[in-house]
Image: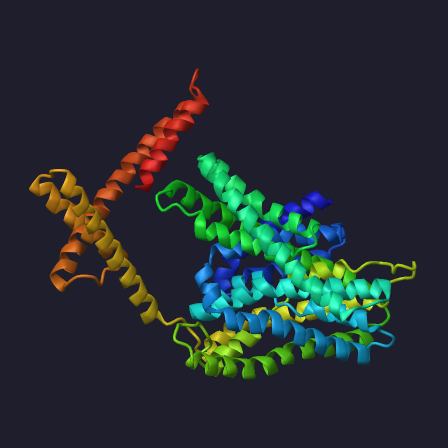
Length: 528
């Protein structure tokens, strides 16, 4: 098996892991990691040969963009304080704690190398948090905070990592220079992200075609990441800024086909790239194990100590941080999404899984210093990092569903239904307002006007059947049954039409492009 065949195997595993995970109630990323471990121990499977400096640029941009599409700027602003406490402050605290413990237990480990280890294991993975927590029916506020933490903590951790690596390689360190680098990295990233978001929005409006617009959304995250890194900014923050800008300003309510196709396209990209990323984590474990040859007891002890620090520092930090956030929240006059009980705080603690970014940063540690000597304890750092990744991703990922069920942390369905009903009412009222505006300039027959008023009401009741009184609901249910029967019969008719048109492809002299064009019209008609 060569590298290309291995990539196709990982993609196949990514597709299969989703229904398997749904069937057994297990997170697909964790299954892919276990699948990668199984592949790593097979003799005919080659070692992964991906340059470490390409892992982040290839994997993170599409994963981050897909994650941001599921959220909004409003959610980030509502969660600004808890996200800041988790994505910035907790990363610093975890980095410092890991650096202190690693420097104390690993003989001869320089401070800068210990800080690099702390930085690369500090950030929980945004993809793992979203993929695992998002499927468990958790309260939306928890998922929002976990997504925000996962998306923004990479920014802090990667900058800390680069500062520590530079200090270790050169032998010099300036706190003031490090702080300035952090600020400049953020400023450059935000500027590039906004500029590319604005330019992409303008360009997509000129392209017009849905296929070209979706292709543009695939290119923009990579362009944003690479350009920011070239200008010494944070590629992660640049992608986040670009994605948030496009999510806020590049949405056309009437562009139905682009929106539907875009959702499908990015669901496919997210599934495949997530599966490959976590499969690579399992495959890279083979290299980490090879470094521990003959030193298993000692290195496993180091890894276990760092795992304990990473896990329990998060718990020790979250308890007072959540309490402080609640106290500050009580003094605010606007809504803020925060954990409301100790059970939700425990779920947040156990959701701190490490993943793609930690693997890429561990493998990106340089081989040599500026003076040509080997990087100190590089093999030990990589082994400890993989120990943390495996312990948090596999152990926590597999037990998180059980913990959620045990603690009874579930989304508030009453609140969700109330909001859905509110949106249904707003949609129906907007349709009626527009109908009145049309009636003011166009003379409509009374029968047609009454029919359109009923359809405006149906817009709301189809979203939320609880709208209206019992008589109206019964009438709506009767109409819904008639419509369902009509659609079933119409669907069979359209199916017969599609089969007939599709069979023309094999007829002599048939033009496949014309056949596909007619078939596309029938497909669009089927969506209505």
